[in-house]
Length: 194
Image 1 (cartoon, rainbow, N blue to C red):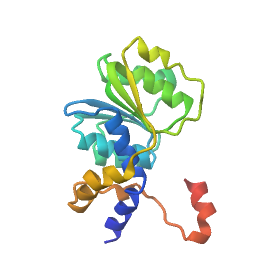
Image 2 (image 1 turned 60 degrees about the vertical axis):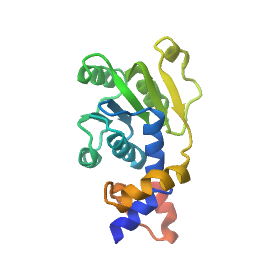
Image 3 (image 1 turned 120 degrees about the horizontal axis):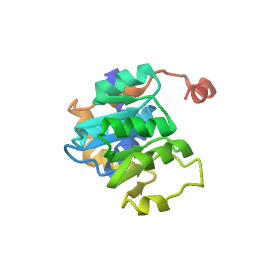
């Protein structure tokens, strides 16, 4: 089906990358996860946090269409604020504790610094957003015993062992993250839209 084909396409990158963020962040049953990014990888991070058993999933999003989709995928809360206001809002939602698992799927300095700030002491941050800044104070994580793990996803391992079966049995439908289709001749338009 068309939906199944779209979901297969996500397995080549965005679904596996979102899943890698959740694995790197050590999402566990009953956890509170915060997902930074509402693009395809972030939305697949929401799916993955749900697969990992997260009870509460907070998506950092400013786009109503993506917020709706994130909620359909399992997000329980939406935070549109950025910077210090975002940190305050996440801490308010978590009774001052912060996230058990933090999925950083953006890569900007602000997104990464905010992810560092909302991670609770002793937790893990799964960082898959391509780093866009070299000037991050990772030493601040040391004093709170927060771990940082991530990088490019091992796509084939995740697809073979977990994700293909989940798509085939209908447990997940990550192809819904796509909002447009382009002919190869219009690749520049597709890149601009992305």
